[in-house]
Structure formats: C-alpha cells, structure tokens
Length: 347
Image (cartoon, rainbow, N blue to C red; front, top):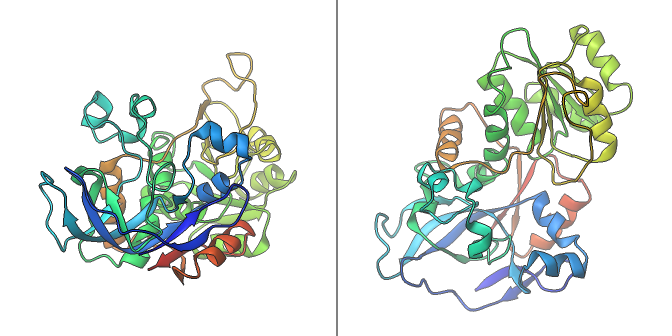
C-alpha cells in the first residue's frame, strides 16, 4: 500500500510503498477514506534529531493523527463493530482502564506515557495511508452519514477547541467577551463554536488580514491584527475592562504579551498552541481569580458531541483536499501558512 511517511529528521515526508498491515488480536484495520494534516505534524517534523529522539518517535513513521475510514478487517477477539462500518479514529487514547479512561477522558490518562501508548501519527503509524490499524474498537467513533473529507478534521481541529471552550463556559455569559488568537485550522473552529455554544461577543486576532476576513466570515463579531495595539482596538470595540476568556492557538512570547494585556480578574487564559511560554503566577503575580489552562485534545464523548454539531449544520471545517501523492505538498503549504483552513488527504 501507499503511505506518507516521515523518514529522515529534518527532511520533508515522502510517499512510499509499505506492507499492508494485518490486525492483531483485538485490533481493527481501516481502509482510510480521509486523513487530516495538522500543525502538530509540522511541529514534530521541525524537531532537531536530539529532540525527536527524546520524544521516542520511530523512523520511518506514517503521519496522520486525524483519520476516518471504513472497517476493513477485524483481528481475533475484536467485537462491537462490523466490517463495512464508517468510523472516525479517536486519537489521544489511554490505557482504557483507569478512572479517566472509564469516563472517556482518555486524553488525560495518567498511565499512557509509561505504557508507551501513543496517538496514531504521533509515535506510531497513522492515517496518511491506504490502510491503518486501530488498536481497540472503543477508539472508533461511528461516522454515520457524515462526509469523510468534511469530517476528518473535526477529530482534532474541532475536538480540541471544543474541549478548550467547554472549560470556560461558566464565564462566557451574556455580555462577556471571548478572544481567539490565530484563525487557522483550529482557530476558525473556535470562532464557530463560541458563536454556537455561548452568547459572548467573539473577537479574533491574527497577523494576516486575509485570516481576519476569514474570521468574520465564520462568525467573529470583530477582528483585529494581533499586535501591540490589539488590546486598545478591542477596548474601543467592546468597551473597557477585562475579557472573559482568551483562547490562544499560537502560544509564543509575543502573543503571550497580548494575552497578558487582555487579562483581568477572573479571565481564563487558555493556551492551546504547541509553543512554550513563561509567565508569572500566584496571588500577587496574576489578576485575582484568573486561570491559566493548557488543555490537550478532548474526550471521546466530546468528539461525539462535535460530530452532532456537524450533523446538525452548526459546525463546518474549511478544507482543501489533496491526493496521497500530493501529501508532501499539503504539508509544505501548511508549514508555509498558505492554507485557509485545513488540508485533507484522500487516499
């Protein structure tokens, strides 16, 4: 079969012929119908050799932690699912047995790292291939009549901002203001979700004027350049005072300066981007009652909820499709910021 693999550190991914995998006991093989390209993949491919080794990722590795497909074969003992069923892969799997996993909150399984359990495409072979292996039927969410290409990015680009926003719903009351920084694959989902789930005024920030136009198209009430005048522009548009929540899909030091400028008592600072920043915390080091969170992906029940929003027309991903052979070009355009929304590879 064909697979898009990361073969050498620092080099672009390549399409290769590899053996078609066979499902082991309890496993499920999927015929992939769509796979999503994500900035997390770009982050991994940007690691130095020492950093990549420290993460413990294999080489070669088939990319793709966003995947949907059709059940193609069942390993011995795999039950609860039928050959021919359309499903989506839940990526951040855990041990399946602890308190968090029992609630479907496998993204916060405390045992996954020690057990060597890694998401597909982020430590083991993923969905950028004609076939892939799911390690357990519980990780496969029914897709129903949803279109694979239009749905696959919801498994991360939809789920991650949904999970992030749900943690701040207590603050996003009528009259509140929510700010989204970075209107890319996840950010344009966040704008839509804030409009659907809350009555807050939604403000988008980005360094690109075209992305600001995009933000308005998908529902932002206001959109401004992400610079040192952002706080002043927001205050002029919605009035003085702190915002209720800031959802940062970039997370770097310059953006953190903007985040701090928007913070006040009880502001949620939600850092979703893969970057690392430093800030001062504590009773006298941050506004009273403010919270700093770094949410990771989302739960299995939340993914089902995201699918329902898509099924009822309340959430849609802006996508551009590529063939598997065009996969390297999809990642190049992702890395260079040339995509309006999300890149989807269709084998």
